[in-house]
Image (cartoon, rainbow, N blue to C red; front, side, top):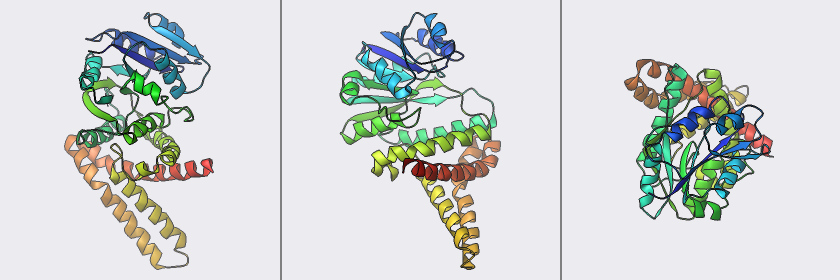
Length: 318
């Protein structure tokens, strides 16, 4: 196995980073080094990380992209692995992440999320992600990677200048790098066995707030890579269809005072939006009946929230 360094950006992560580092220390395959990059925390992050004997770098608050890049520049491993301070890697995570690199043509590996939460909303979020993993698994190579469980060849990572630091917060800087690598012809793949455990939003409000934020910053991502707005290996086309239907529904309502038929069109579009949620809902119901029952409502609210987030992102970028 190639020598590997694990980089963890941390911002006010004192409550979670201990479990993350404990899991990394108990890997079946030991990393060359573990690097925590403290991004200007004001809590016990540095003190907690210091108990585990890992390498700690500190910087003024500049966002996770800058923190990860700094960690990569200071890493000694041939492979750089990234996870987040609120993730708990499975015992075989490192071994599974490194295994695909035996193929010299592979430059990046994406792992997977799991959760131990019992909240219905969190289980819904996990099932939503698993549906996207099915999409990734159908492809030999992928173009979309998230840094909760990601690995790159260090030399290539640095050659491409790492993550784009113009992205504020955790807002799309990770798929942006994988888009650039894919465009240049490099090969990345998905290994679902490389698992980390993570807590998803556990209330509907938190879930929709997360979707709004992701939609807002997708505007910046797609502005840099407009072709990916049409298709990429992670985002299902069904989500784009539902967003498109919702925009048409809004347009029908807006023009309804001038064209009475628009009211009937709007009602038809609302029915169509509901029908568009049924394939996902049926799959969720086969896994758990309660998930299937709540899915149409959550998916419609997701479409509304994502649509508003996109519009907000467009206006903020003007």
